[in-house]
Length: 248
Image (tube, rainbow, N blue to C red):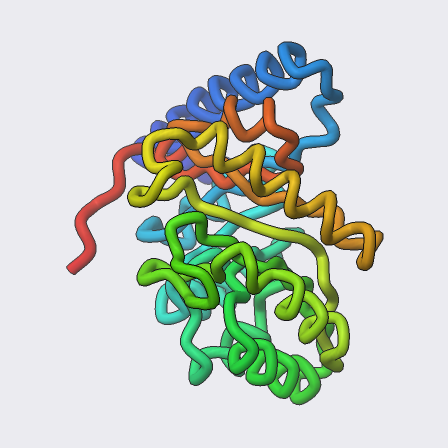
């Protein structure tokens, strides 16, 4: 009995993903050289939102170990379908408190912690699931003082208090900070400066929380600037998976 040959479409998709991954790896490697950093100091997190579990399986075959989602209704079934794979799951989108229980069931890291109510919800969910969740404080450089931005993220002056809340919460682990390049405000169109500010916030945070070393910043369009600033994790979607289909 001959071995089954993969469907041409699957083989072609795997080849496409492999080529895209190689290009992204080259970009990260070049950025690390330019910044005087080691390649192993930057983790590639592939954002698989809007793409099927089949693509996640192909990425795993190609050596990807960190994947991210931004909507629980898509992430939960996808994580379940890929539960047999050696993957680390990152949740990177805005998170409602009523979704905390679901997210705590599969996510290893939540990058979008931006308010104390969410900390409480994630803590309760993590304890219920008997898991520990790594948490990153999302910083929004276009948020007004003391507020949460429309797209998610705490104003910079709220980071310290949120970090204390996470550090004191059972079932949660404070791992670092995250940002998305702002579309509004004084740093709009200047992602490099935003990422440098994030690294400054990270440095301050580590004075009180030395283990909070993760700096999640940079996406397909601006990963080089993130690496230059000192990001430890870059979240890349379209450069690996292609242009995203429209959400219904």
